[in-house]
Every structure is written in C-alpha cells, then in structure tokens.
Length: 257
Ligand code: NI
Image (cartoon, rainbow, N blue to C red; front, side, top):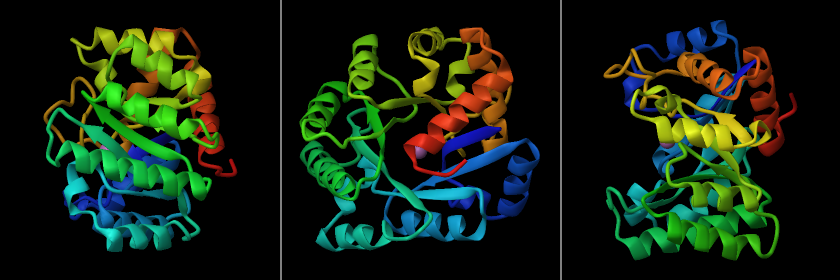
C-alpha cells in the first residue's frame, strides 16, 4: 500500500516510456500517485495524466521558480483547473531563496494569492520552501489564523524549529529519498522527530533518486526505498509505514481509500 504524493510524471524526462514507468509503479504496489504541477502548462498536463489513470491525482499550482510568469490570466486558469474532479490540492507553491529564479516580492505575492485561493476552495496546499523558512512560516501563520489551512511541506529541509512550527500549524511533512543519502543525518533526525501520523511519502521524481541510484532519473517505484528507510529510522514495521502514510495522504487530499 505505497503512495507517492509528489512527482512530476508529466515532465519530458518520461516522454519515451511514461506508460512503463506508471506500470512499474503499479507493479511495485503503489496505490496512489499525486502528480504536482509546477506552472500552468504543467498543471494542465498533470490534470490530463490524472484523467487517464484511476490511481493518479493532480495538484495544480505555480512553483516559486516560475513565479515571475504569473499574471491575472494564469490565476484565473488555476481557478478553472481546481474545479476538475481529479484535482485534489494546489501546488507546488512557496518560496525558494536558494535559487532565487524569480524576485522575492513576486514569489511572496504569488504564494499569498494561491494560499488564499486554496483556502477559499477548501483545498490542501503542497508547499516548497528552500532557504526561506522565516518568510514561509510568517506567511503560513497569517493564513492559518482564519483556520482552514491544510497542506504538506514537501521535500522537507530546514531546521528543527521550522519542523516544529509547521507541525504546530497542523501541516504534514513529506520526505523524499534524499533521507537515504550518506550525508543526510540531519534529515534522518527530522524523520525521528516527526510523528508518523504526519508523514507523507514522495519521490519528487524525476529528481532525488535514492542512494545507490544517484545520477539516474528517479521514478515513483523507488518510493519503497524511502519507506524502508523510514521503517528503520522509526523502528516501525515496513507494511505499517506504508499503510499509515497512505492513510495520511488520503485524509489530507480527501481521497477515498
Ligand atoms: Ni516537486
């Protein structure tokens, strides 16, 4: 009962063998995939992919890297997309001050706008935050004041305080296969600190393949490496990790399990 709550199967990386990748995911026991949009074009592609496969769902949003591309028009396109039946959340959205591919003020403005849209529509958000934890938490706290803020902080990075504050806001935390990297002892520490009831599994494919496969294209089937690592770190039975994280995902994204 594995789940991959964050991947980008619509990326051109899979143009040659998308069906095989999805079949391998099914064969490996994955029961749920959430394909996350990164801009309007990719959000539309995520929705079409979800329409083709019963176990694939979509989130729509604009990644902070692409914040500079947004306009009133793209926002109204998002508003239309969230009406589609297989759209279960908005993302990925957030702040990235590590690569800073869009100006900070534009990233903040867009993050606020999509958070408001998600809250009005009662949808959970998929948050990307890299080297921006102070601004991220400030904005999330503002939005959480009215209640109704639900979501997941994806590919968790940051420090212990950030982890605690996200958990206090009721957010879920998703880890990727990068917790298997030799030097990632800090991430494994965060896995220990995070209650399993708040953890989601994700690959962020095509990125971040597990240790032993680094330098190759990642795919949802590899989520088992992550589940195994979490099972070892938290000393919880592997099948139990899969089941609990699957249920966590279904609860957050309102998917009937
Ligand atoms: Ni991603």
